[in-house]
Length: 299
Image 1 (cartoon, rainbow, N blue to C red):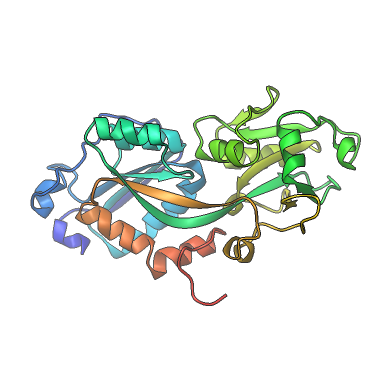
Image 2 (spheres, helix red, strand yellow; image 1 turned 135 degrees about the vertical axis):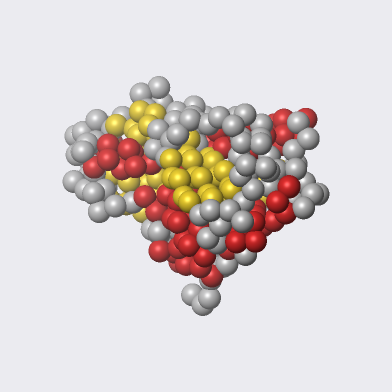
């Protein structure tokens, strides 16, 4: 289908690249396929936002342009906040976000004539990770809150080694930062000692090298360099691991949807992308990268 637009096929993956808010004009709605997609980049897609989603989106893009050979897809990270701002200001066709768009952001978009359209493209279990040498196997949500607000500062207080706790968090522009703050910290502030890191990969790397480290990352970023902590909703609840089955049956307490947003009704190329992402090939990639498909068979 992409060949109908008469464009070349390329892929540019640029994790963490700067967002140019005026660099990508939003296609004009209501015109012919070529015209509405712009005079210079007709079948191109600018996709920006969530660091949690960026690797998944890059793999999606590589596969998408193989089957839509005329399309150009550019994937950029930078965080959900950055992606949403780019969508509002015409710097992105599709925004990746690990949290729902906030009412204030929707209002800001509408003030500029943009109506964000939401699509749930995958699901995630936010995994709590520690150093492999940490003997703690599970925590309650209340204990997790006490750790990340520095009410508990040594693993000994939780039955672990006499080791200072080192908090690793995403930076404030990340949707994951906001999700964790709302769902674990009950919207309280993080400890001032928390290390604010620009990517989930850096959290994994930091925790793997620090016996006192703890952090949170999307399940697709967990590696064998760190160990996953099982979570309990409270002291009387069972300890639950972050996996696809527990996301689907609702027992893992930090499960969340992952979003893509378009600015209004998707254009033809945006619709092709979204249909493909939520189709069998796109959802198979979701599972392969460790996230949870929104559409699955069985299980």
